[in-house]
Image 1 (cartoon, rainbow, N blue to C red):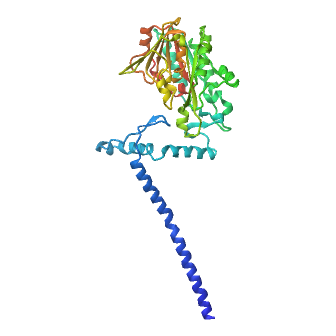
Image 2: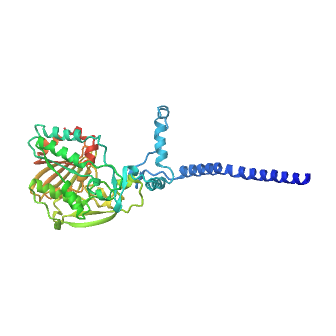
Image 3: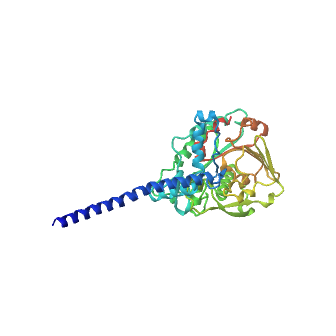
Length: 403
């Protein structure tokens, strides 16, 4: 009996020791794997090539910061190194995409402020109601009240937001797009100031309902069809003859990934097509002059096909964002049009050049040369156009310097 009792006790003791040994072994495994992961990632980070530009996010990445004593002492080095580390983290694009799709799977639709919508649309969330539309509209009205400007007819045209026009593709739960409220307010205010307003809401809603795609699916801009639709409405409002669609030769290039794609992380979204509508009858009549602070670019075409080789193909229209651009068309009937604009004007500019001998485009984000009123006095335009996307008008901080 005693021997038997000792045998059982020894068996239990052995079992406890075996279980204890088994429990101790895997306890170190997570720590070992974690340290190994950190080591691998550190080596990967050190030897991974540091790119200057991210084609998927369409932005320049943080360079290694200045390690001078002053930058270290005031904390600048630490802040910039944190950004540098995040920008060059190994497999950054993969992790950004994993995070976006994981959030989508959890029901959080709106990675990077962009909704993943039906029919492969990536659409920016609506801007906050606490925005600068009224302030910027006031700046436009004050500009038109200047003595040298007030006698020149002015038109304001705003591109509705993609989410407002393409409401049917939005996710079931989404924030409200307040275009109706904004457009009504703008219309009333401009009417009191004697400024013409081209309201595109119903035209765009009806065209979209009829199956016409007016906006890119991976970018916040209207596409060439949308710009042409806006051009037709502009001509109708001003009593101009719009050049018929049949006059244009259309060239289509695929593989366009735009701004909403870049900020969303939804890397599985298919690309857009970019259409260039070129009126060949204008060949030899067009001259483009782009002026920046320290350089001038001149061309005999409004299209810059080198950009069609890039992920972001939108700069094919007038070479993208520039402070001051002049387009002349020796065969056009009207005089000079001065456009105060954002990037929505880029693919509409070739259409405007159908009617005006000179189209001058001023982008207040970059224009620092002289007051726009001085341009008016020098160029003596017969028509002024303020052309913005409604979201850009809401967030712009440069129109206050318009005078």
